[in-house]
Length: 137
Image (cartoon, rainbow, N blue to C red; front, top):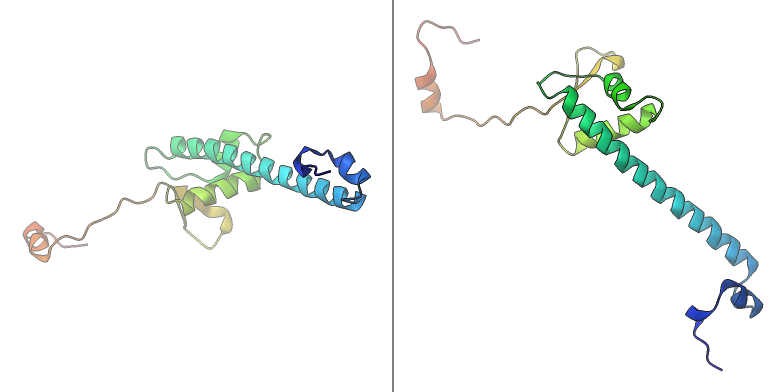
């Protein structure tokens, strides 16, 4: 009697001694880990979307912002500090944001829109752009 293994239930496989109870327990743990990982990735994608929207709204006029302002905008009760910070880091890694510090104080980190790309001008064009009598800074 040839039976397709795909048509058998777990109980039938246990009864036929094809698998053991320890195997089932191991598969259940693995399934729980995978479900937790998928939920975490879905949550991170949701937080990234909300943080991206808040970040672009707060910095749309070129003004820098701090992590706390974005965290408060997306909801401090709804999202953890680390979730918001990870989303900001993802934005920075994707080139949508940049960070800078004015001092060595880690609480003074500012988040801003990336700087526009500056193309180098030709030397001749630069010489023509010099205004006589004005010192270059």
